[in-house]
Amino acid sequence: MLCLWRPERVKGLVNLSVPYTPRDPRTKPVDKWRKLYGDDHYICRFQEPGDIEAELSPIGIKTVMQKFLTYSSPHPFHFPKGKGFGDSSATPLDLPSWLPEDDLEYYSKKFEKTGLTGGINFYRALNLNWELTAPWSGAQVKVPAKFITGELDLVYHTPGTKEYIHNGGFKKFVPLLEDIVVIEGAAHFVKQERPEEFNLHIYDFIKKF
Image 1: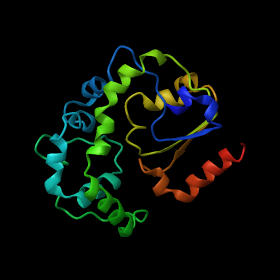
Image 2 (image 1 turned 180 degrees about the horizontal axis):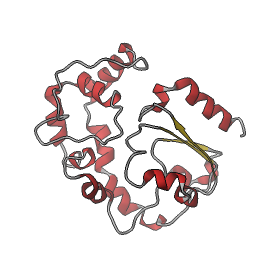
Image 3 (image 1 turned 30 degrees about the vertical axis):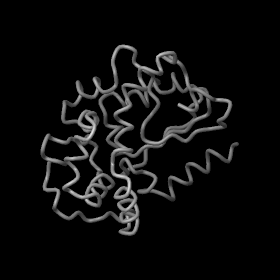
């Protein structure tokens, strides 16, 4: 969005996981996700203020953070009503090598202070943002860009996304897109999962500027 609105302030962008997609004037984002995945899809479940917070509260912040951060399936999150994550949430999970216990503790303590509402409100504002950005329908992002995603990223596996990224749709709306990188074996938290490889990709891009 910064690149779209104030391109003169940006020399280049490394974009992660979620490619820029043009505003669809026909369909609000939440309606799109509901049609695609149903009412239990996480974006749909996040819409009612206080609802998902109340459901996740008994699970505990640390377990919630662990489940979010270690999610490596290409399939989207679903929160069946009254069932939390839809599995046995009390079952301990093994931490992957890229997520030390200290990091999990750090994230957990921060969210224990603030609660989850601030983060979830991003999704509650999707339709409002869609309304406010109507004047930019069809606009292009005109800054040099590089896109990095994980092979197992759930966004990458959303129907139509791979085709959009690799078959010219992405380049149409981000004409200065220079490179697309898909990191094998990585999921949504690609920067933590492959930090050295990820940092090299960033460095190779920004040293041009």
